[in-house]
Image 1 (cartoon, rainbow, N blue to C red):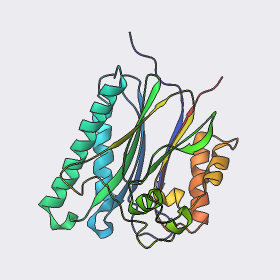
Image 2: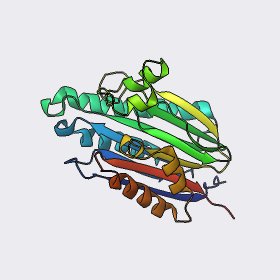
Image 3: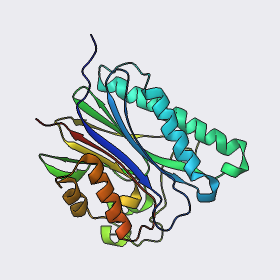
Length: 251
């Protein structure tokens, strides 16, 4: 018997912004052959050192594995699959940096939301983010793996100071930088909430109040993504922007 397909609406988009010369952000949404669903965004780093190639390698590795994967009966197997697949992507990116000086210094962030059964399993590497909008309001569910986030957690600086800190782009974890990879996981009960993944070009430009307001507009899912990107560009568009959005289908 074929498992039920998750019903809802989704949209993805990445934009180069108004300043950068290349678009290093990627955003994907996919159904597997078994009807499960996945969102992901990746934000490449390296500029001339092919940050765009790093993020493409990451999402391509994830996509290739997901479309043909077996169905997951539980959270543990979901985590094991994510762990194996994202570590494979890490090896591909790191291997490229070892093989050619052209790729030295490249890497990427990545956040993945895997919808399986009545759970959402979120894997995070770096400082791209996952937000949810549900009965408890709008909130961020991932923690940035960055130096300024560490400084905030330890009380060294405030959130306001982090916005202009000289090391605000320094990551403490990224894909492809080292031969090994660590991942942080968040597991949520899926109760029809909206899930949005985005890169720092979005959340550094928009407040959580602005993002929540856009998600609550009476628009199609793709129009909401277009609106969020346009809002970020209106704030200067100093970075690439990437968004992957899921909304449940309500009767």
